[in-house]
Length: 408
Image 1 (tube, one colour):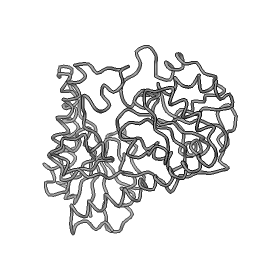
Image 2 (cartoon, helix red, strand yellow; image 1 turned 30 degrees about the vertical axis):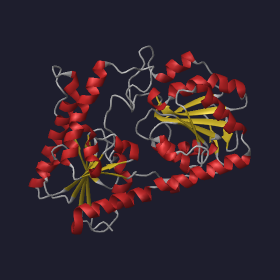
Image 3 (spheres, one colour; image 1 turned 135 degrees about the vertical axis):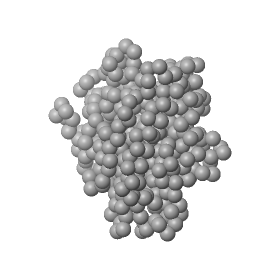
Image 4 (cartoon, helix red, strand yellow; image 1 turned 180 degrees about the vertical axis):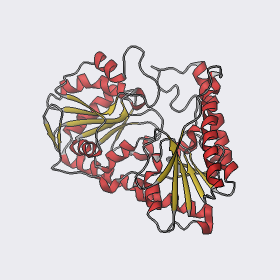
């Protein structure tokens, strides 16, 4: 079987599936990604770059669409070059969010096209306008609605859509729900897990150990979409109430979602200025290697995960797989995974007092209560294992491509 993967940040969410397919005899796996994508060792992939960005004169509401067309145009050129060379994929699996796969069917009308349906924008009931600190303007709402034009074209083009969670699927127009199935791509549950003798050496030389009163927080970047502002605001009171606890924060200073603060270079600087804390007790590690990240989760006494109603972070599932005691925001799609009192605790995103109290409760909880929650976390993570994600995708590929899909 010939499988073509298209992702701006190739391999993106498809890393584990690509690795599995590439290791099966008889499969030919090819990738396409933008020039800055990390790529994947052992897998052939091609780089693309749009020949220009959207024009200065383009209406602001239409810029995302024009950029999508430019991405799709450049990828189409690559696909037609491949076609002239005799290449014919059986299946194309793509993240359509940047427009790369808009014209796949023009080049390869007979190939099965699977789209990763990550998000469909709404002006209410999801991330936009959720946080009253950052109200949605009329201009912002119109911009969001206009972005969906490309997603609607993508839904029309694909043969099958796959969404990671039920809630993410529910955001798409109901007329397309029968076309979208729910399969989470999975996290490396087998490579994670608790370690009662784990240690973490901090940049200042201090060593934290599993069993110490350590509060952890992880996000790709430290920003309001992942509740960083809500977390930072409880720290002064938390540190005062528990003079023995340490706080470890992992994440970069860039912006993944939303925008930068107007009065500071990044959200970490702004929120530290507004919520001063003892740097000997609150440790910002930035972005860390996976081995360090794993030890952060292993020494955690309580892990805080906060998010707007938005895409579910891998880090929350990885914290579950590590057997962390999790205090998480009661927001979609978190509540699909965390069951209050069984595998973690849920709190109102905006209730700082409740968040602080649950963290304090976690630090002081009897060992039996903590052990039960940690075991529940570890058990629930099994449903999001990479192997289940691969099985789900492989089954759909076989169904879509029939005899051509020699995937097993």
